[in-house]
Amino acid sequence: MNKLLFNTLSLSVIALSTAPVLSNQPIPTQPKQPQSFISWISQAIFKKEPPIRPHKGGSRPTVGNPNDICMISPDEPKTTRVVWSDRPLFIWQGQVNKIVVLKNTRKKWTQPVTETQNISTYTADEPLQPGETYEWRVFFEDSLSLSVNFQVMEAQQRDRITADLQNLEKQLKAENKDPEAIALAKAKYFAENQLWSDALQQAYSVQFRSDELQKMIKNIDNLCNVPK
Image 1 (cartoon, rainbow, N blue to C red):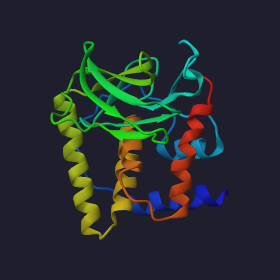
Image 2: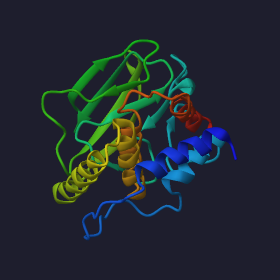
Image 3: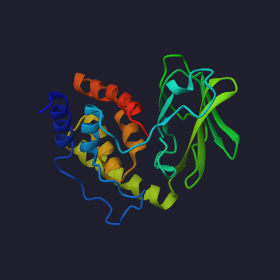
Image 4: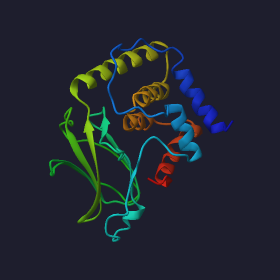
């Protein structure tokens, strides 16, 4: 078995060796897809089709090389991507000069980015609101951009997930698990509920101390090599 995959899966199994008792109520998310988080890791490593659909350039003017820009998360599936986080992490590939979040064409947040930057967390004073749909836009020229819509999940569903995550973290801390193991456990929880953007946000939420996890994050770029 590929050593990277084996080590990554081992960390996930260790972090989740004792699963907490979570909410018994079903969590309605997006339509179920067949991939589990473990298979997604495998697919990301081996460059197979992942359960997310990054939005790539190609339908816009060629000035600024839009074909080189890929909006990884939130991504663009057939239906609007739903996220749990009210301060989501934006991940892209390619050279852009700023990212913007809009609500009904009105700017909620603008963040200039460096030429080499490819992640940024929503940092406005007010969090995004449950149940609302927003537009994430990346600018590669002053007036040229690409965009993806996403929705923050409804409050009742979001509160249930928040309680589950608190219980999960409490148990893992009682077992003296480190922040990396806790983040991996949360990422698996999100992925099992088809919340892929939140799973990725957890993957980026800790300082990675192992070469294996560094390589796993680096392999996320391979998502942009998958044709839509």
